[in-house]
Amino acid sequence: QVQLVQSGAEMKKPGASVKVSCKTSGYTFIDYGISWVRQAPGQGLEWMAWINTYNGNTNYAQIFRDRVTMTIDTSTSTVHMELRSLRSDDTAVYFCLRDHNFMPDYWGRGTLVTVSS
Amino acid sequence: QTVVTQEPSLTVSPGGTVTLTCASSTGTVTSDCYPNWFQQKPGQAPRSLISRTTNQHPWTPARFSGSLLGGKAALTLSGVQPEDEADYYCLLHCVGGWVFGGGTKLTVL
Image (cartoon, each protein chain N blue to C red):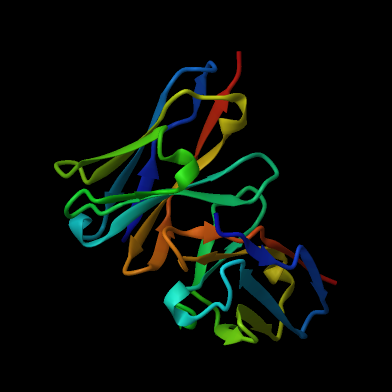
């Protein structure tokens, strides 16, 4: 069965970086892209970025373009998302989401990132 | 930056029918915006319901259907169940990247 297993909760100080991972299984990794979505406490969903796991092409929401980097580890079928220069308003649950041909389907359970001094 | 607009809240009676809509600041929503719909219950990850305007996922209950309506994407729930009370989000890819709507809080009362 398809699974997207995310890394554990993180607590970071303002200005630091965080790297969240999304380990996939149950399907052919390079056949599906991965998007990252976040949700601040009590707020709605916000799309951040997408990566093509076949060729590494990326697409970023403009507001994250300078602070987000995604990388792929095909040996472990894992996608990593790094967010830099953290601020308190980056406190959120970060989700990974499988996407093929504009049809997102399976979600990870989310990773809570807390940014606090 | 594209803004995607949904009704902030709607209320429906059990067994009733309700339609949620999703509008884009770029203009008419078409199938080329690849509308997607998601359901989220408190404390849970979102769940995908509808992809590319009308396509249900294998786990999507038959009472959920997607369409285009009056220049917007629409999600219709027919024969609403108490467990359908949740937040619903649309997601569009009209220009550039994906953009979520602000979500609709659906109350079943």
